Figure 1 (cartoon, protein in one colour):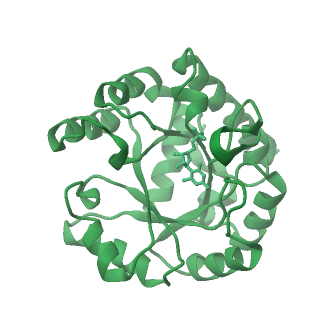
Figure 2 (cartoon, protein in one colour):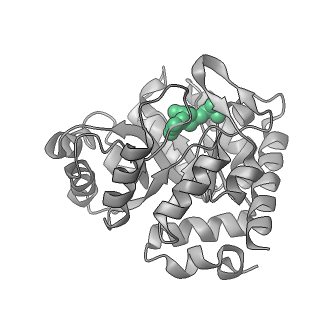
Length: 266
Ligand code: S5P
């Protein structure tokens, strides 16, 4: 299948090479899954890529939670991710002023040198996006920002008026790849898609084949429903990396997400 057939308007509207790269990979693997690789050892992370790389389209990292992190091991890990044809997305949730966000793209983790995508809160104003883009430019690379428009955690403070402002400002910014939406609430996602329009991506955590409440205030919704409601990518962590058989679980999430895209188009 061609990406244009699988993605319809999302493909046609997109002016972002990065979004097109994602849509191509997702079509080739028939998977709209981003793995949240929340394991705290390098060995655990390498095992995950080996096990599930073929069933996921992107890899989301929290680089600062790895106990035995070294620059050399991380470089190898990113290489393995590229070999598995995965976009790399550092979920750093930047939120500072522009020049500090730019500086935080460097530092010991040097996120600017290996990430294709990063997350940011727009709470400090639009310069956070310019700062992050300057970070990639500093090393001759390009990348995209996913703005948190909604969150999956209970009691979060991203109320509808805040979401509307984030979407209004973010949708017009070329450095914004898209938005993080709440995968646990299809009706919120539908409203978010209506506000965002067709051009930008919506990626959604808070998704699990076992819907309901997760650990420490996390909430889960159904993956197929999230995609039908407008999600372009389901972000799945423990549903895969804590499963008895991560490979089988990743394949099941891939199927559920692809089914959602087929139903959305049909
Ligand atoms: O609102 C959010 C935004 C994000 S990026 N809720 C989230 O859970 N996340 C991230 O998605 C979170 O940092 C974690 O890495 C992942 C969800 O993991 P799971 O184990 O609950 O699937």
